[in-house]
Image 1 (tube, rainbow, N blue to C red):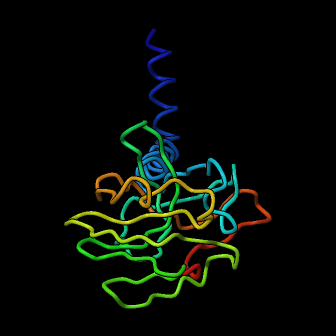
Image 2: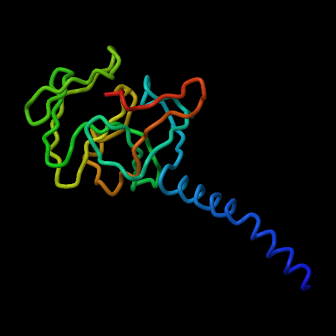
Image 3: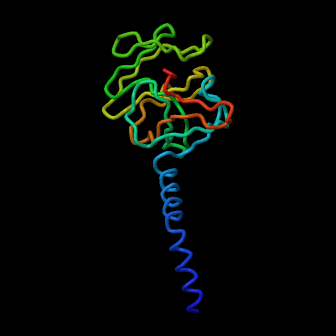
Length: 172
C-alpha cells in the first residue's frame, strides 16, 4: 500500500506541470474558445453545413459579427450575423438595409440574396440577427430581436474543413 502511494505521489510530482496545463487547456477550450458546428445552409456562402468554427465567449458585439445564439423556444444553437444593435431601427427597403434611416451596405451578401421590406425597432439589450442566405434563413425577420443573453459566442475562425481555414475578421 505504501509503495502504491509513493508511486502515485511520484507520478503526480513528475507530471504536475503537464496535468495543470492539460486542465487549463480543457477549461480554456470549453469556456473561452468553444468550437461549434454549423447546422444548415442559412449562412451560405460564408459558412456551409457541418463546418466547424472556433469562437470566443468574451467579445464586444458589433454590427456584422457572426455569432452563435441560443433559440430559447426550441433549445437549439444557431449561427447568424448581427445586423442591428440595441435601440436601433432596422429597416429593409427595396432589398437595401437602413439603420436609423441611414443606408448600410451589406457587401458580404450574394447578388441573388433578397430581403423583403420590413421595419423593426430594437429594445435595450436586443440584437437583430439574420442569416446571410436570406432566401433560406429563419431569423430576426421572423422572430424579432434577440436578447444579448441569448448570444453566447462570437465566431472568430473557420477551423474545419482544414483547407477552408479562415478568419472572419474581414467578412464585413
